[in-house]
Length: 464
Ligand code: UDP
Image 1: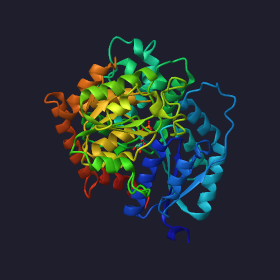
Image 2: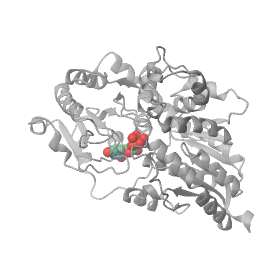
Image 3: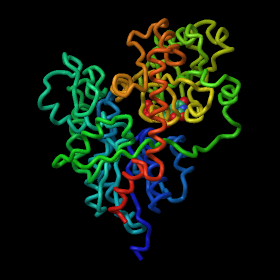
Image 4: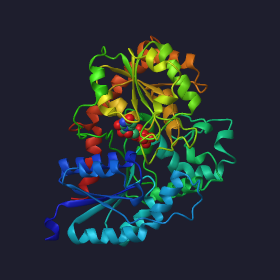
């Protein structure tokens, strides 16, 4: 009876919709193309209403279950998100082992997939007798290459990365100035740094690493990773996986009706991801900069971050207070004919797909970047936290799919870069051409015979 069951994949999702959504998309592709069923295993700490609604909307080939709550109260109150997720993962190994063993009673698990903070959970898969273990890396090859090199960098680079005179050079990757390297690596005395070095070692335990990127964005990095290295798992680019068939709330979002009334490619969409918000001062300059640019804009506005960390909203996308109250005096009235402000949340993929959208001021969260590329929207990079600064370097200095907002972030610079990305004849025109090229490559990669499809087929061939 066992062998007649469809092949099943168990996926451990560390907290964050940015991890859940691409893994769910992977599960959908596995079901549609290979008849593989899946269970998404989530942490109790992120059982938000948004997450529950999302899980409930998935097709019946994908099940979901939540691990029991874990006590993290012994950790420092200011522990980094990376530390919390990594600790939670390790503490959940016994519970996860039990869950995976139970799954074996009712399904035929052929593989276990963990995402970027979850490699320690491979132990649970081994203990439960799941035959293969994969790491799903939800960002890009630059991020993966960095983490894979961390044990070596840790041993050879003295002091803080941000104090290095030279940028960090990794095989096939754009040189990254130390200050732009992954946020949890910026303070080596913080436990989050140790955790990332640890993950760099544990990644080698995977049978293969699946990355949500595509060859055309990082051609040299994938070439470097394709050269086999003893002890390093093979790396497959299986992206871009972005959310498909998102449930459409009725009535249709008002911002889409507003976009319908704007000329083609005339609107810059401004969004800082699911949880990002700006310090009060920058929010003020951004408002005035958008106004000065003379371009139309659609801005997802959140209350400023001053009272908390830049990612204070990470677990909860709702701003606590009315974010419009923080805008400069008279701004809303003066810009009412050219701008639309949406508090807290907009249907981003639909906005990017809309013909009126011609630019994307983005925090460089990787899901947002992929959504921009899939829809051929040129980007203005305004990174905030996590790996967003190194993504901005890669997009602006590497592939040329974005212009980077100057660090000083004054209203005149903001206005000038907004104009350049939307209508400029120099850098702006180059970026606009580049994203169309990447859009085409992304689409071809996911089609029959395309690179991402072939890569996933190669992985799955071993399971069936
Ligand atoms: N998103 C959205 N509406 C918003 C803000 C964000 O739909 O107003 C979605 C966006 O489409 C993307 C995700 O939230 O899929 C954000 O993920 P990303 O990796 O870009 O950034 P993070 O939220 O992890 O910082």
